[in-house]
Image 1 (cartoon, rainbow, N blue to C red):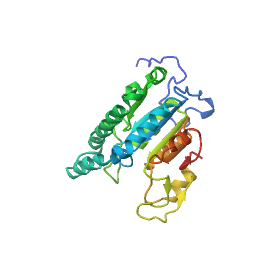
Image 2 (image 1 turned 90 degrees about the vertical axis):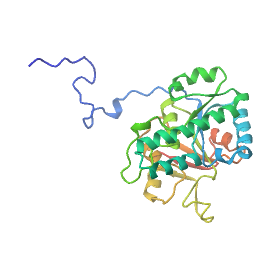
Image 3 (image 1 turned 90 degrees about the horizontal axis):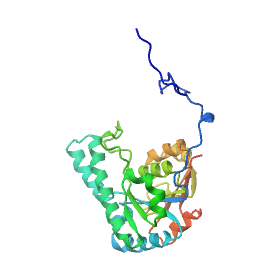
Image 4 (image 1 turned 135 degrees about the horizontal axis):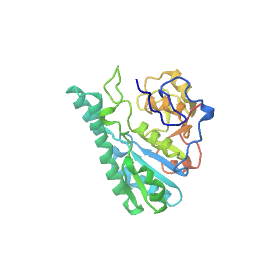
Length: 269
């Protein structure tokens, strides 16, 4: 039998699945591609679907802030995602197909938001354009990207549910982690995290600051953020906290960019 040919490298002969293959202490520090960029996710259901009364002043605020701060706007899907997934599940579509369909909605929202921001050099970008982010920002662009992660048909299956687990909150977080962003800010229509849905229970307790582990152990019935983000946060290298704010309230975005806690901070540890 001929001998296997191995290229000389630090991973020579490795299966890449051996437990403890690489010690964390030996890993090189990751390059932060865009360390001054603030990733700002605008929810579809909680923000965009409210229409011009919310979106027009919000886009004015975001546009004005882009003159002082580097921003990457990430769009959610909203009510149309819920509709298309309901139809798809009724027809028995696989989870990967549901992810492919729902991703089209956040893409539509990215197009609309980029047009609303056009007078501030708003420009719609795609996943493959993220490596061009430093150049786009230096050129004075205000980039807008859809939040659905590009798993598409390869979306992770969810044994107990057909709904794709990686949605636009997850996408915004993964983008922020990949580019090594300054902040990951998730804009909603509530002030932050509560123990229950505040629209259903006005007496729900507000949570100002919490770790991902503590939040997982609370096992709340409803969350303001996708649950899988909590697991990703504990494993991330660059993004160690997420800020959830009410972006219906003017001024909250800038306060969050400056490090003020105007909503809820979820920390890695």
